[in-house]
Image (tube, rainbow, N blue to C red; front, side, top):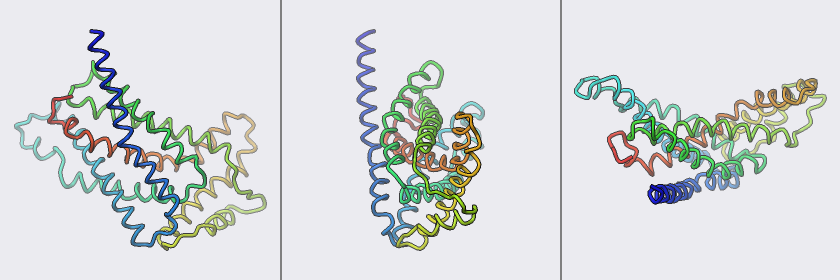
Length: 277
């Protein structure tokens, strides 16, 4: 039993390291994007967004297929007409694309606008956390989940837990950043001031950067004008997290790209028709 456990641990460690290597290009791609993104043309920007959206769509669609198969396996007979019709097809893929396009746009704009290294460093440091969380849930579900669905359920739980951890870490880090001083400015003036600082070769990208900058300025202005009156530190942290809540979409987009990588790498083993897991 000890020898078997040791082999399982070694196999799990190799698998985790392999997953980290597959995931490493994701934050590296975003780092490169943060360096050269402002020089992209409209065509290049659209190409990057569409390419990333299609990649995310594949991951979202494949995981949706698994969730649908899990439901059908417990609710509908395989011989039923509805089993074949409901197992996931073009409509589900189009729905996944509609979710992937805005999320990819948000991630690209956030990477290009990254004001400091916190976000990108956090993404790199998060890779082992994400992989270890998936491995943890995969082991914990061994006694509860059907084997062929266990891997996807573990990934889903890892995504949910990791979203909270990463967003909380970035929100706390935001408390210690230096922000523009908006004393004497109205909310509109602060938003216009930050939007005017955004520059990019692509007019489309610049417009999106200006919208994102205006949103950030609104959060910062509220933080400076409203939250200083809140004395309790815990309430201040809560207030900032509420003001920065839209950043959760950036974190979620990044995690969906990572999940798409793992889904494609392991799809032959994770497919609901496979019983190898």
